[in-house]
Image 1 (cartoon, rainbow, N blue to C red):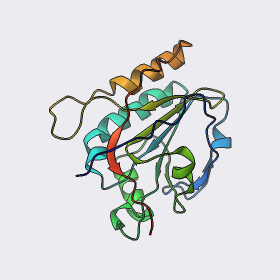
Image 2 (tube, helix red, strand yellow):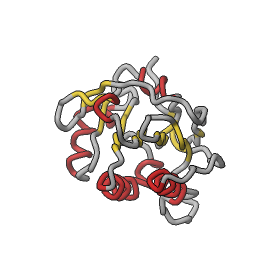
Image 3 (cartoon, rainbow, N blue to C red):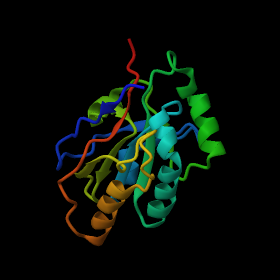
Image 4 (cartoon, rainbow, N blue to C red):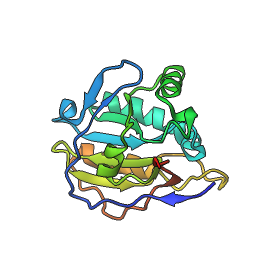
Length: 184
C-alpha cells in the first residue's frame, strides 16, 4: 500500500469547473449547479483501503453537513479499465448499497482531478460560498493500521469554522492515501 500525500493546492484558489455524470442518477452535475453554498469536493474511489478506512465518517459528514447547507460531491477519477472495481457500474453499486448522501461522479477523462490538483484518495477540497478554497488537507490523523480512531476532526473543524463565519486555520496537513490511478 503506497502512501501518497495530497498536493496542497494554494488556499484562495477558485474551484475549478466540472460537469460530470452522477453514476446513480445518470444526470450531469456541475459546479455551476452548486453555486451560492459552501462546496466540499471529495476525491475517492471504490477500491482504496484508505477510503474504506474512512468511508463511514465520510457518509456521516455527508449527512450532517449536507443538512446544514454544504453542497457535497464525491468524484472518482481512477482508470476504470486498469481498475475495474472503480468502474461507473461498481461505483453505482457502492453508492446505492451505502446510501451515499451526495452525488458520486465519474471523471473518465481525469481532467477534473488534474484541475483540482488531486493526487490521492481520499483528497478533500472545501470551498466557501464564493467557491474559494479554504481547506485542503486530511480528514484526521487516522490511517489504516495506526489504531487512531476515525473522527474527521480536521475536516470537521474547517467545516464548523466556515459555517460559523470564522476563519479556517491555514495550518493544514496533507491528506494521505492511494495515488489516483492515472491512464497510460
